[in-house]
Length: 133
Image (tube, rainbow, N blue to C red; front, side, top):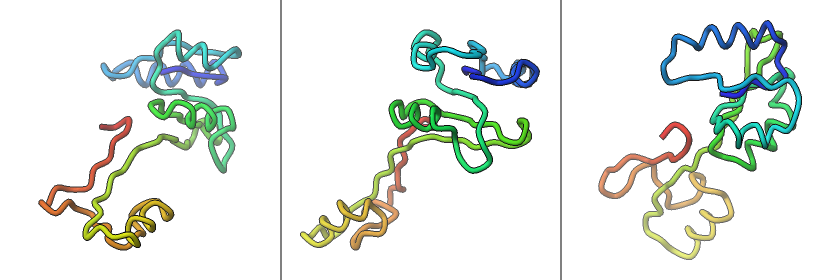
């Protein structure tokens, strides 16, 4: 986990809170500098940074769009709440494939398309592929 541009007290609190979790390590607290280089250097898969109340900061959103395997957590309201950004790939089954259902699946982006179902014909559930899987 990489902490970016957080006040030292907030960074310290987060580090102490997560110290009890074996699977979570704060690898660096970065006050300024190149976010891209820091993530490459530390191999961080989670970035925590300040955010406004409406969305992830621009830097976090750009990084997330470029590196879909990284989760971005934006802390809001003096770290009392937050926003989590992550990308995931979802798959849906196209049943009764036709020209119309294929065109709709491509242009509507998935589950709204005619002919799509939540489960595969064999009953297999819908799949999500992303940082959680």
